[in-house]
Image 1 (cartoon, protein in one colour):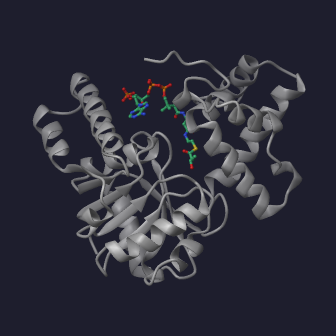
Image 2 (spheres, rainbow, N blue to C red):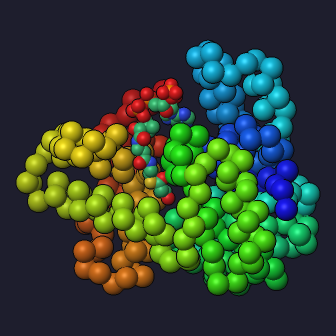
Length: 285
Ligand code: 3HC
């Protein structure tokens, strides 16, 4: 099965990035957000991102217009009925995702694949909320989706070979290297990355080093593009906290116990770049 029309549900950073790579890959993209303003804001963000690429001479004007012409912003789930693949990227909360999967099952055509961009939640549980469990899998993009080169394709026990092959084909058409992983919390990247990020917060809270020195050390000492505290701000502290909590719940390892400072920042509304402040301050535009 070749994916020609993709539905994206969720208007956060990941939804917007996945919409961009899908439209650039030649897919028709239907962006669904509960509010028309959020759906329109995603299209406006896509316009800005493509305009930057035109300015840099990396994209022709005509191609930019063609990409934008393939994207439609909607509010009704029913508008996803013609999609070959629907990829959800909503809040990391199992009950909310279960409800959405049950609704998508009713709204989408019988052959459509329903995929999740979850980082840690059970793909099998989401498959169980539908009458098409063999057509459910994980397609996990990384932030920022237009830049990061890998996608994890997650196979739940119920996922069919045809579903996995179609998901792989879609991610490859988006220009990504695909890695396969079974359905377990954190998959590959987050299972390895988030204990490190969590420990960076614990190190900061212990007073052993400053924020700037922790980030400088990991950039210069390991050649990472960003320090751990900058990266937490990019991913979002609320998202990061739920990932660490899910890893802790799944593996019970004391090392995965969330850093109290992370929970305190989230409780104070400091969510990282998206809220204007996290470990660093970001001037609001
Ligand atoms: N959208 C599109 N393009 C973007 C972008 C975005 N949001 N952010 C950066 N870029 C592009 C820039 O246009 C630039 O392209 P060019 O070199 O072709 O002109 C290139 O990326 C580099 O950007 P900058 O020069 O502005 O900045 P940096 O060189 O500092 O790179 C970065 C920024 C790509 C974010 C880099 O710091 C990086 O790779 N950081 C690590 C990110 C990471 O680890 N992500 C994974 C997080 S975990 C995750 O996503 C899992 C999830 O489940 C939580």
